[in-house]
Length: 199
Ligand code: SF4
Image (cartoon, rainbow, N blue to C red; front, side, top):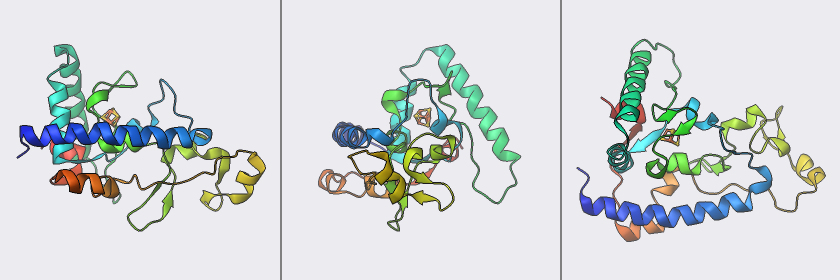
């Protein structure tokens, strides 16, 4: 059960991480090709959300116009129906139901993964990963070796870019287990794919 106090702490946390993430995006800007109208990262994914992130998203829903809520409800039903008929071995991937006309309808209330997406990051096992949109010729594609599946030192040195392509600990595991969350005693609760929060 997420309380009002939890939400206040979470909002404080969001303000702090937003500042930090802004600095990471700025530092990595030679490799970031995110732009207005690109919704690649919201078109197909699992979107792991913690209980508090989902509760915050639902607070955002209360601020939306009735027709937008109706569209989201329709999208949710569609995703749930797709999941019911899904029989693949890979995790079920879907379009986020909050994406309307290629825009996030709840941008200010979006989850942590939505805020970090686009940056290179370390997995829990400390493996350097680049965002999936590299395959679309987007983020980090200018220094990526598609055959080897990693950032290429050679491409980087030829690029003439001063700033190195770097990964940061912005994977969800690290984002919710850092010194700030410990200091705030912020309990994120259970984490599961967004679609599972819809029941
Ligand atoms: S909540 Fe918004 S930013 Fe996050 S995946 Fe959905 S549409 Fe994209």
